[in-house]
Image 1 (cartoon, rainbow, N blue to C red):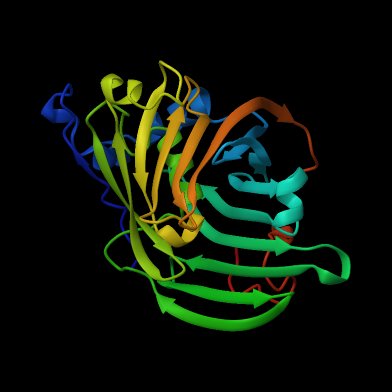
Image 2 (tube, rainbow, N blue to C red):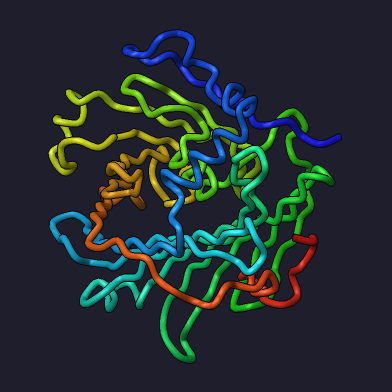
Length: 303
């Protein structure tokens, strides 16, 4: 049987009337209006690229980051990609480390982005010394299963089929971000706490989003005034953080304007601040171009 829409639990906000609490169910019942809002308010008309400077400890520009949304040729199919690569002396000490997180998702008639795949790649070195380690999740909601794969240097090293939770849908963290940006999990009102069903390489999980008050925001001097500041908790393996805690500041377009990943690798906080937001033109992606750890071989499910 098909899974039902994910029951995002949302604690009542201090300033919000109680009627706003179960946001996901209300939006699911108003799918056409929700989708219209997504398409006109926060969903870019074309491809979007956000660029960031990334700092660590006492250094402000140790890496470059980008967050993209790009369309496939097939209507309603999107690819989101988050990438960070070290620069300068940091590149020398980390052997030109580059990390990529990529998700393919589909905009449904209910207005939600639904996960199809989620892939991480970690690169080190150059030329003959290049290493490439990948992990991937391929979701098949109709069959109620997910395929987990691990690869090293283009070679499949592990493959496991798992059952998906039967009671509700799950979202990888990039599709969760876009649903959050489109308002599908409810309004971002100070005091609100959302628990979003997710899935990681270890299995079923949760993403917790806490919308901070202006007073709490002022205590974190890295972030500008205005906008919306959230504290997030997600699986610590994703960004190799102790406890999985992040702070994310959304501007008035709900773009990630700046963020802090807390206690990365046990060494300290990593900070990112947007330097540029732009749209870009590119030939529409083809579904067979979806990146997979072992490239062409790993095509377990139809799109």
